[in-house]
Length: 197
Image (cartoon, rainbow, N blue to C red; front, side, top):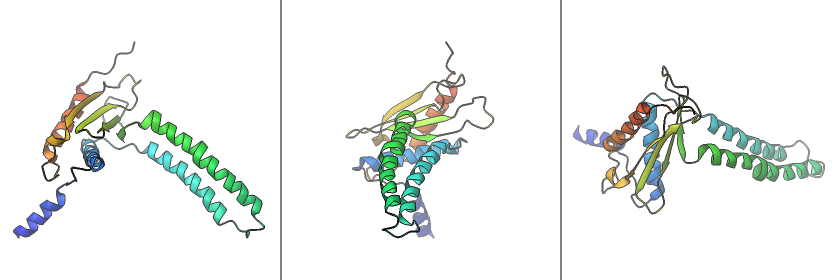
């Protein structure tokens, strides 16, 4: 019976390679998303869906070129058109739109949310994080999804060493991390909305 309890507790443990910078950031970012959504914020996936639609358009052009009804000598002009259209769509137009979205809207964001149900604010959250290469300083920022809104709160952030949240074996001490993130969410909720000038 005790062995089963140990197995079930080991399954819930979040362990990471402490020498792998990307896996540390990924683990922390996933935990932040879990914490924010557990507080009642619903994830806003509209931006992700738009990027998926753009990618689907690119794939559709390739599929049409591959499975067109006519055989090669007869569909030569059509294939040349698809081949010419594919790099234009992929590398110029749609890729440019995706890069613009990532540069202007996403930046370092790991989560976009809708406003809390029943709250007086009309704007959700943008949660972003940074963990610079060769650094142990993790920065978490919570900002308004619409900073120009009258109900937008001021941006709040903390920067702490990841060594505070991981054991020597690479196990995330979730209680400590949850406490820090929840305190940041409470700080954002307490902040007065920006005054219009």
